[in-house]
Amino acid sequence: MIVFTIAGRELRHLFLSPLAWCVLAVIQFITAWMFLVQVDNFLKFAPTLAGMASAPGVTDAIAAPIFSTASVVMLLVVPIMSMRLVAEERRSGTLSLLLSAPVNMTEIVLGKYLGLLIFLLIMLGLITLMPLSLAIGTHLDYGKLFSGVLGLALVLGAFAAAGLFMSTLTKQPVVAAVSSFGLLLLLWIISWAGSGDARFSPTFHYLSLLDHYASLLRGSFNTADVLYYVLFIITFLVLSIRRLDAYRLQH
Amino acid sequence: MSNNDLLVKVENLYRYYDDHCAVQNLNFELRKGEILGFLGPNGAGKSTTMQILSGNLAPSTGQILINGVDILDEPKRAKANIGYLPEQPPLYIDLTVDEYLTYCAALNRLPRSKLQAARDLAKERCGLKDMGHKLIGNLSKGYRQRVGIAQAIIHSPAVVILDEPTVGLDPIQIREIRALIVELGQEHGVILSTHILPEVQTVCSRVQIIHKGRLVFNDTLTGLTQRMQSTSLMLACRQAPEQAVIKALPGVNDVQPLDNHHLRVHFNADSNPAEIVAAEVLKRGWGLLELTPEHKSLEQIFVDLTTADETGGATPLQERAA
Image (cartoon, rainbow over all chains, first blue to last red; front, side, top):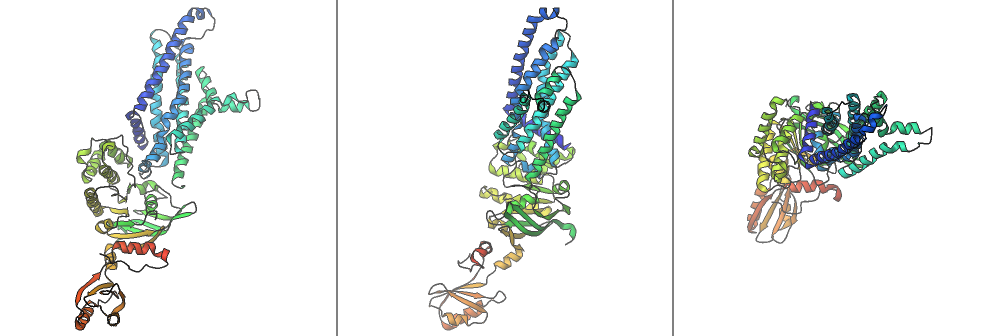
């Protein structure tokens, strides 16, 4: 109940500033552009593909690239949306409103996380509408589409959790944005390292945010991949709670 | 007074910032209907104490009971009884007054059906009736402060903690806020931190002076008034009065010459030799011009207490106080 109250305020705060609208518009434009390019390409190669035995379907050719592009754009956008969650409240002194209310740290963190997550899911919904619109004219592989949507939702959830944690570390929102972008980018490309080394390669691949997402985009639903994101989210939420708790002790 | 009236009980409170001890061994109580003034110079530990009481800061050691509930053991239950206005009001400038207060009421877990009633009552008490639809960001400082206070009292908590609520307001606003605080004191226990001395005298029923993290003074306003009462007389004569003669009078402790015509006569608190001094001066024909009891101002007490350890003892009364 109280979590939803806090989440509602976060969401409201986002939409009261031009930032949320601007981000929604930009993301929508970029993914729409991507969508058009993919549809155009698909139409160009459709005759060739029709002759192949196991050719990629519409969903593979159009939905997957869009989700893939969207995740990279989100890598830039989520830190900007998450940076002010706690940092700004600390800076302006409004955090004490939450701290002196009969609300515990878990509720504060979950509320803030949920608020941001709802915003990101609205964005995801808008993006999904585009490949979904193809259903008017052709047959879609809904399983693969769902797997892609789930993948992007989990990636966004993970981005938001890491961004929230980074926001609890500083009073400067911009510092929070830069450091969460750094962290996310590092985790995105971490599998590039040690690719030749048999000892470390699996570890790096497991840590990578990208690898787990890639398999979901291919339509292979693996519990290990989903679990990776769930663990990732829980870890950063717990760290955020601990961090907020530590405010009362330190200085 | 019954134990039920005890709203806040602070025991052996310590708070360290690294090696620096901001608050040491603080003990005090607050009862229902009291307005407790927390005085101290800047950096004395007032705000730290307020933050600890409101649960924003954890104490290093010590116990705080709010309405009988330990704030460390059961923070949620304890915090439900607290309304806190920090030095900087925690306002969301992108919300309207109504939206903000509704959110605060919901944060304090008021049931949905009571949100509006609580909001309207708080608005009315703080003089914000016509401000409901205004953005907080567009309000003047005085009105923001009122919204801050409205936020602190919206769930009618047993204890209201106000950290320097009148800073930066104009004199009329200060009067209004003070009147509001007095009104709050009738139903709630109020802890008020300030460094404005007259504020304490007009508003508070009990005064605590904190200096370098220690409580150096804790008394009711009546006790304080007694303490402020004169222990010296100012004597002015046309001819120079003889010090030795005055000093020899019964009840007089000491005589301090100020110039040729003025003497300061110190006496014990339990006796007032004004009559005898007057009679003596008349008898000797020195020409009595003035004989007035001198009052210690709260400021003087404050200065005495807070400068005591720099000079190694209470500073003597130097200036003639109003």
